[in-house]
Amino acid sequence: MRDKIEKGYIQVYCVDSCDCESFYSSGFHPSAKIMRHIQYEQYILQEVMPFMHKKNPGSFKIAAGCSLGAYHAVNISLRHPDVFNKVVGMSGRYDLASKIGHYEDLLEGYWDENVYFNMPLQYIPNLMDEDRLFSIKQMHIVIAVGQEDVLLENNRSLCRMLSEKGINSSLYIWDKEAHQARAWRQMVINYL
Image (cartoon, rainbow, N blue to C red; front, side, top):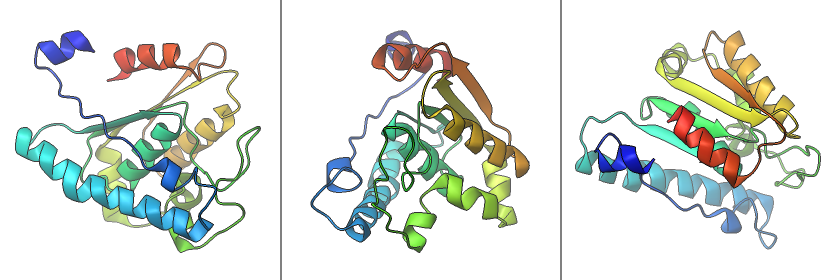
């Protein structure tokens, strides 16, 4: 993306996560994990986004991430479609509260409304708010995953659920697993 950055076509803000204090924390109760995640989302919305707007008012906002970062990008974009214009999820997992292959249930069987409203595969099928659906339909949604990735069906499910709500998304299936930095570097070039 160096060329696009140097020519001024894009500005990139790399925001670290707090996953070691939320989903990947082994020392917190699952209710504390999801609350820490919600605090992180508020940080993005109340501090990062205003900072970006101040630097470049009225700009086209893209959320992007790979692996757990794809979850973060897709979830915050679907929850706040009025803030983002595009989202790119690369090799993501869109329900962290279920076991998929070697990926454990990161909330250890715990479930409450905060979990529900932060797992796209759980809340998208029941999304009925017409204003929010309209806003999501305005977003450009890109999902990319490898054909041998254990998360392939998870990604297909997300795109199928979006389609059932009349929301367009583009699903790109890459050769092999593609759950690695080399593939993600190429995906970023292709989809941002």
